[in-house]
Image 1 (cartoon, helix red, strand yellow):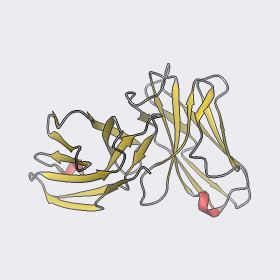
Image 2: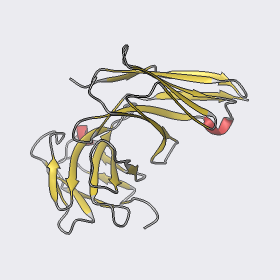
Image 3: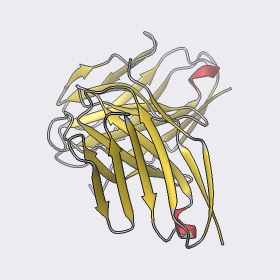
Length: 116
Length: 110
């Protein structure tokens, strides 16, 4: 595709509910990253996929957060038992060459999650 | 640990130069990046600099790196109203994940 796309663009849910956020990376990109951006802050790393496997999930805040990338392309970030503190913009990025410090990350527009 | 800090706000007049500053802590960072974020849009990569360079120029953008002081700056020449946005400095960790600062809001007055 032309760029990284994310759906939905906005998601409003109630405390305690389950949500799924989807990311479609740039076609052919092997690395995919999830970040979370709270209001007035910079993005914070959550998880990084190299192909289908999670190469680094050190940023996931707790076991309510989980992400998958079963075919090495589309990824889904799943949040169970949502809390108000989960409200943020969730950003996805992809890179072409398998990750690493020399690999430019291209970001999607984000999904704004609001937990009431 | 890894940490990146930026000043929060900068206001300039159209046509002036803007200088946005950033400090980082991880001396092993290989690349340092500047991203731009406009309202409702994703992060746009502006430029990056390799850690063995002191300066990089790209049209109106100049990046200066002082590795000894772990200080990075972005200069925008002839700032335009379309440059109004939030600018993020980021360092890359060993695994490739980016560590971002909290962002500098640039306001350009006509």
